[in-house]
Amino acid sequence: MTQLVVLCGGLGTRMASVSGGVQKCMLPVAGRPFLSHVLDRAVRPPVDRILLLAGHDARSVRELADAWQSPHRGELSPMPLPGVGPTRAPLHVEVLVEGAPAGPVGALREALSRLDEEFLLVLGDVLPPDRRDLWQALSGTLRRQRAQAVMSAAPASRSHDPGNISVDGPWIDRYDKGSGAPYIDRGVRFLRRDALKCHPGDSDSPFFGALAAQRGLAHWICDEPIVEIGTPDRWRHACATLADLPSGPYATPSRAERQRR
Image 1: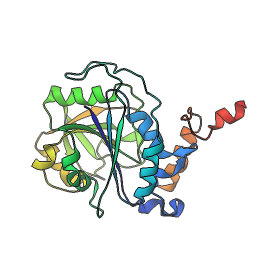
Image 2: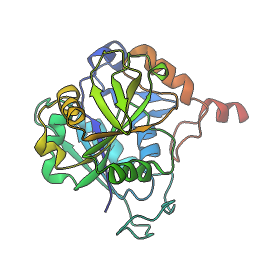
Image 3: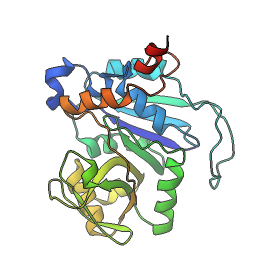
């Protein structure tokens, strides 16, 4: 089995002026909750299990988990994986609600017993790259480098934020938010569960910083525009960017679809 884990429990304090208390990844973008767009991109074969780590406004995340349907049902994996056959098994979606805000890595620690030995991790407020082979690209990097984790990275010029990643060959050798480094965390990671037992920290900087310092964090460079909803202005940009993409099966029609009618 292959597992996708989505972090979707943050308070989203920077989004308070537009969220009205709603979980930020549930804000509408192009007629659908942003989390729907995240799942549409991240849930590609061979993913067959989804774990949504919720917190604030967990009820709306549960409702989406019940209603969402993958637009990629019936697809086969673009590349065979060891021990994973070309099956079309139904997706299993689980929502786990944290007892109190624990930080992104802290939420993973709380969910440790529900995590696979290896898993794909995405952020609920950052759109993953539109790659059919996303799982294969990151898991392949993990195995080739014998790393404990892989982090997708983009040139800092692709982001509104300062770069926080510097690299040395295939490795991330520094993870430091706000450092002005040449690359930035793209919001997609691939982890071995054991990495959570070996390195400290409940937030990104101490945990991934420790992994980087010990040559345990490899990188996968993805030079694509970053679409995220961390601030009101970025949410409005995401709305404009995704407005012309095809809608899901039960979504409000996109702007282009409405113009054709």
